Length: 147
Image (cartoon, rainbow, N blue to C red; front, side):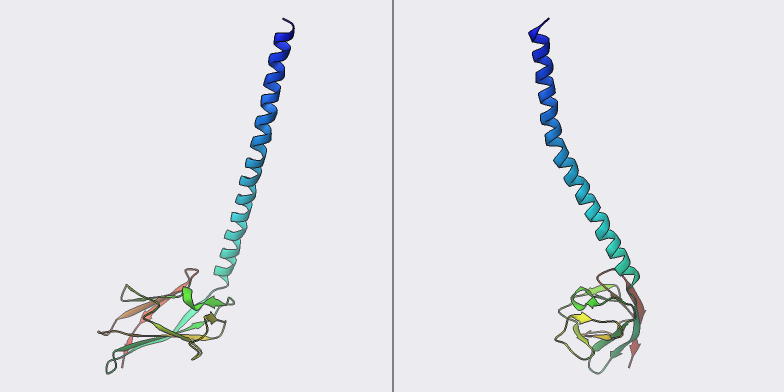
């Protein structure tokens, strides 16, 4: 009971040191990633709280077959026009098919607070309802006025 017990204890001790040296960076990375994810979630929640939109009007021109939806950014967040979705009678209207303009400027993708976004799209029939949703999930819905 001399060297063999001492040798076995030394081997077990070295094994514990190696496994602890491997485990610590993995746990540290996981903890760091979790903290980053919590921070990102909190930032999205704050941005969602600061986002508000209101439907100005939604009209369908029967002679031209054009649906025009005007929405105002009433919140404090600047929104991305490319992330705005339009649903017409529950059917997703592709963004490419809806001509989007911010304050009559179709070249910008930035929708600042206080500005209006106009979405125009050809529709074969007069729709009844529209829904406009931002990239953060804030949405507004309304009925379409036929003119």
